Image (cartoon, rainbow, N blue to C red; front, side, top):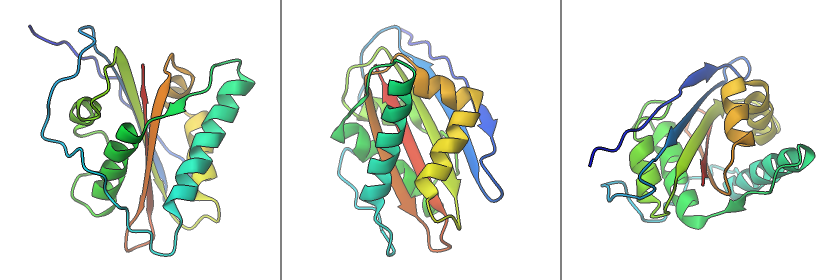
Length: 175
């Protein structure tokens, strides 16, 4: 059976030396397939930055926004977290380019059954509150906002910082 996937990629700018991209996919088969993306938990190098606190801040801000719009809260899923942390780490260290390369594989590697999924990525540098800069940029971008407002119930968030101080963010949304 051929699985047809539709990608919708929108490029937006957050701020000077910042960028973000959004993508979404629909899985008409509603099944996940095995992939070669790691299911292992990956520790993100913090470099004096509390990545867990940044991830939690993004989670809280996104759910606060959804609540303000009368939308249900998302539930954070550790399997999704693991995949997006790895993606943020790989973007930060240059293993993969900034963007959504491998999104379908990450989505499948979560092991979560899904009917649809989406992903927002961003990076920024030199801000006292990088999580808020990322979220505010996403909220100002139609493609990112569509993902945030989408009919999803699960999310995962991953943050990584590279040696130059750029902070990479990935948030995946699944239903």
